[in-house]
Image (cartoon, rainbow, N blue to C red; front, side):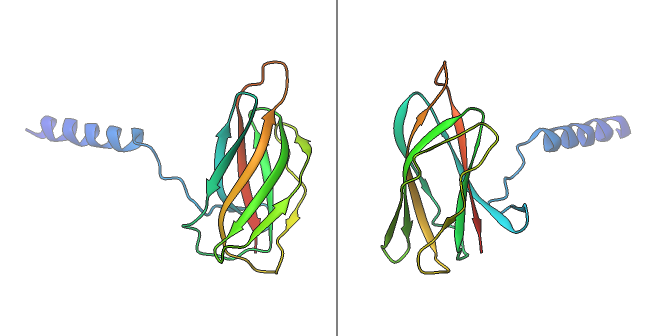
Length: 137
């Protein structure tokens, strides 16, 4: 009986350790910059939206970080909760492991709803890239 309980307890701990860990939506790093979300982008020229409706803070600045492959970001629109939209013409290639310039949000502290960006993966294979959005209060 004792061996059975030890086996079940060990099995329970094994499954708990193998289960996916929750991802913190609001990770804070790099001098107060806060991770808001990320998006996998792939296969040539396209556009995507990153919805940020569940973020409970207001921010003054944002920036993009790119991993897993270089990305040519052509344009970005930041949508605020009051319906206003800020157009941010980036027109720059962000290399793997690097980030965009710091983008000041118009009007000071703003509550973000979503970010739409137009991009093109670059390089020989034109594979996938991960774009992460970080914000500063």
